[in-house]
Length: 143
Image (cartoon, rainbow, N blue to C red):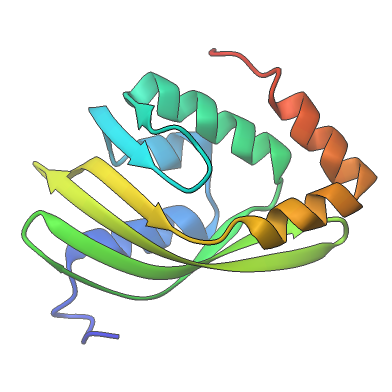
């Protein structure tokens, strides 16, 4: 990991947000015209779509959090190596993630996430309570 005094300031912001994520915290660094891209999902366009997706994720995985392992960035381009930790069926599933961020005026214009969602999907399918949360999360509407 780069020396903390030389790391891009967004890495620290990201670390703080994901240590104990809330909807407001997750939304705080996103531009209104943000674009979010991740595996097995259509790209999300705009802050309203991101808010709905994060509401669903936080409902589906109460206690979700992340641990930043490191990152590199210069100017408007930042890469963050982190671990997403999702509580599923009484245990925690850790998923390694690499996020590529493009910033504009210090806010996220685009995030492209690289990770394998299979371990979480499998765990959800094996846990009736997690599967129910997954299903009910899909009924959450904007608000």
